[in-house]
Figure 1 (spheres, rainbow, N blue to C red):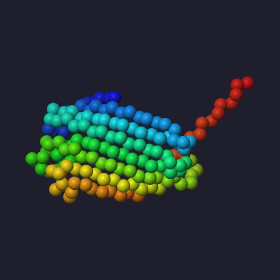
Figure 2: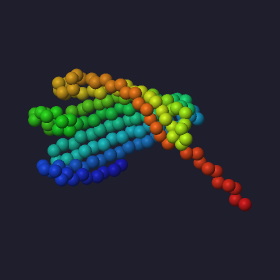
Figure 3: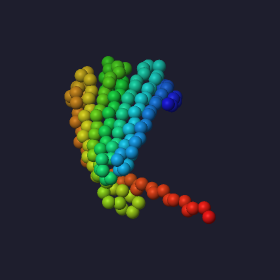
Length: 162
């Protein structure tokens, strides 16, 4: 758990106290890597308002080269945070959320790098009062991506003592 203060140098000045906590869970995934899951909470507190955010995400290797991933987040945001440009909604707090899932395939190594290709789908949800700003209650997203990351390091075994 962490806590920090952010001091704004812009006018009007707004100081924010940010508090976060997270939990990580890892377990072997049938000899194909590690199934990793994270649960996170955060809170921003200022003189004007306080908002919370919750997140859970997971990455599950299903074969030596294939992984499924998912993420769900629920966040409180003010009208000002969302840049709604509506004085009547500027200090109102809204709950927005997003569900995101996808797949990635690792390709053949290129030296010490591992390229990959994948895709994902997402749906973002906003409350009824925000529909006019976002064109509806739900927004769908589709992504196709490429990735490039370092290969897993292999541990060298120490020679036996003489």
